[in-house]
Length: 410
Image (cartoon, rainbow, N blue to C red; front, side):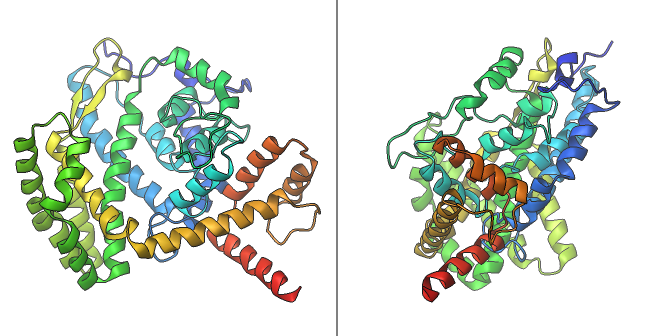
């Protein structure tokens, strides 16, 4: 008899609405995919602040879904051999499209800006915001979907000192619901490992593709030659891969940099036609997927774990360093971050100080009325964060433009 990957409690929901679904995970996927927060991801940046011409959060989520399904196909062969019921693809699709649904406009820069604003009001963090949505009446997803999405199992402090870095966790007011989940699930479930792996593969490749287009091939190659060297990256690698001896790590870094240049960067730079690009990317993804192995938990298969070869772990880390060294840490991008921070702060201040039901933002009247009725500053700040997450980047730019016009006119 095959061992089950899923148990009855996986299908429970925090809000007991007494409805039974033939396929609870399919229901989760449909609710998530058809929701306005999910569709709005197409208007939120992934790396480059131009979601129409570069990868955005929705195209990234679609990519994560495709890669995660490839991983599932690969793992389900192993499941069958071990007489374990198969991983549910509808669940994987639901998690894929929900995993970034809590992101605010302007990506991680917008996230950090909101967190600094919320230092004394419980903080802001994109995964915590995702969970905030998923436990709401609008979504009310299954326990298994929720626990698969819960990346960080600690409470974000309600009050932190000025300048404190972003803390990954969940909001304090969620403690009751999260503790209920954690009392049932003792460890990370397999789906979380699958989505994390698919997420990492997706963004390291898509970020490099966007950089090649954004910077142009010539400038991209110049920056890679400048920063993607053993001398530049060895110390960074030592901080992360402390369990590897110095000589072995030096050998691995040297070998993997050469491999990346020849088998990833070279093909990506040379693939011009769309069909060639697709084949190139598929080849890169397949190599990562085919190297995955599974540490099967015979007692409780839901707690089985992915095992990634150390060479691939290091390769993904070094690929991410290309984006970091060539773009994220550049003075040019720091200038972009400063502008984003200013826009996020201005938008938050405008909404928090709103004292009329007339707004130049396309918010539903009920949302405006709800905002105006909140008297507690902490609750109002949290609600403003929710409203900001409902805005596209263009809407925020439109708002700032109007506010600046008002200043000039007065």
